[in-house]
Image (cartoon, rainbow, N blue to C red):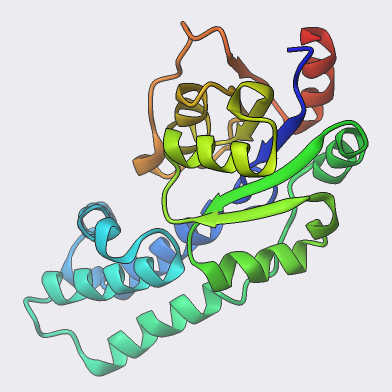
Length: 232
């Protein structure tokens, strides 16, 4: 751990709120289609569509919006009206304009670590939306590099930590998703620090790698500097 030189952070639901807006929009979507099924039924069909469409549309608001439209076609047996589709499109546009709300302790934590380590941002999702949120967050100056990727795999982390750091063995990834942020980073040879968020998309769920010596969990981001100091 004494060789740690690079710390990377996930963005959505690690540095700023994100899943909250998806859940609120899902609620509005289910209400819009309430004449065609209960909330639970609509939500389950939407999740199925999202799961199918990930390999086509990737992660983010635009793919979510297309999945809502597909679900509306499905639950109405192809009879969905143009006005309903227009309403769904408006949901997506609203999500792309939501203000960025940084999570507690983010700036203080980055302030404390930025002078000691190389700080990176590694996030996935729609390029334009992620760039917008980063610009509005006011956090951009903390990062020596920003990588917006289509998927987070062990190969992704190995490539990024080699390009922008001293290799994965001297790097740490911090995020709220075990599946995307923690497990693949550990597989690449890095440290993986899990910071749970109250809301995590079901497709990001995975078992915690408790047996891995490079796995850590903290309750909130402000515990990260102390964790690193303790480990060194």
